[in-house]
Image 1 (cartoon, rainbow, N blue to C red):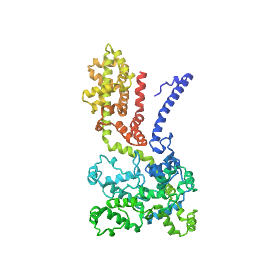
Image 2: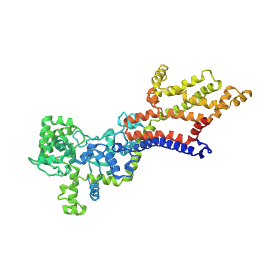
Image 3: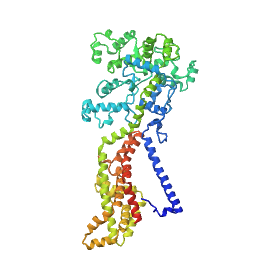
Image 4: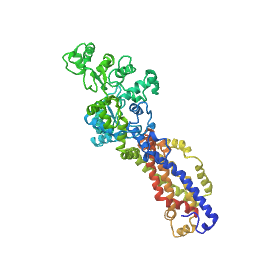
Length: 622
């Protein structure tokens, strides 16, 4: 419906005015659209790209931006794991760049190696199995398996694994520092179920940790600092990067620049399951046990074994996950074993041995893989090739995952606690019913009967618009508390049942209705209720629609007052639930929840915009 009539548009001044009005309105619309588009953009982001103010997330069209997000998610948002695999290169995911010269042939050799090698759960992490305030891909898969196994019953899950989870969201495992001495991978209970999941994951859902990198980050960089030149100056070496330093498998010789750090690392830092013990050290181990337990029956009782004599005990291979035996072996390695009897057992060394057996000579390997190594020991852990081609082969799937996962968590949270949706629906419905009942009655009384102080009353109603709604928050809260109405729907709807602006708007509309209509209906015997119900309200459909939409919008977006008067979780509305979600979820998930929550109001505006415009324009024309 046009604001300016067809005749008036022909005037030059009116055309200029018309253009100016529409230009200002378009600018105003843009100031509203831009923040909304920015919110949509942020709903797809994670920590690594959350600071970039772009309307279209860069990962949608830029490969390096997508690779950063992939590495962040792949390493479970743990920058320390990234530093282990890229020692001296990156200390945060924001610094990640695409590899300059990835070698696909080495990546293929790595996959061939894994088909014949059986890694232990202590040698790799499950990629994307936890994060900060997000449900990563592997975590969703694991949780889905548990739900299916337990018929989607949390009670059955708690009974089966002897846990006390209050929601499926609590079911998450965060494996950290598997290379550290105190890490243990359990085979029983809920953690044992995760271990089964971990063992059965495909290779692209795993990332292996560079043992040499953990040595550099835990021993060398803390001592020499980040600059490799300080290490070179102190030890008379000429390494170009930390990753180029070869970490010996066995203890370095006396006066070697890595000997002290190597001994400290193997004896006190690294998980003993990444070590091998020389069988010649068994007499020392047996002597230590004999001194500690005195009698073999004491050891058998502690270990739950049946050895006949201490001399029958051998160093276990592989090392068990837990138990007194493991504790005694850890004590032996740390305090008794000679450094010469210990050696590192790394997956990168196993990969070198695999290539040695396959190619025999370094010349054959260089020719086949287009490399330029002098010895097999120079071949580094191929982490860049593994990460890049794991990304490259699944690039489209990865992009779709980042477009969906924030919304997946937001929807899961909203639907898992359907009470907030139910509460919001009831609240909105009651607010609309009261708004189109109480306000028209008050406005009709002022318009029809014209009391002596009607204008003063309208002015009083209008004065309420001069103050923010929360000025009345504390008085309303205290009143509702005294009436014992807190945590009820009455607490939500009663304070806003009568609205000064709505009454003012309705009174102006009712005043414009023809008086003759009421006089004729009264002469025909129509009651006051019939005049109000069949005539006034029937003719006021446009303005009543505007009031209903206004009541819907006010109730739907109400947060602070709803949070104040309904603190019981069972009475939370959707906006309160989203606020609580934003306290523990990532910012991207919070924005995704806000975008989802904005859809109903956007839909109402799109489908009812004609009613809204008529409700605003018709009273002005009348």
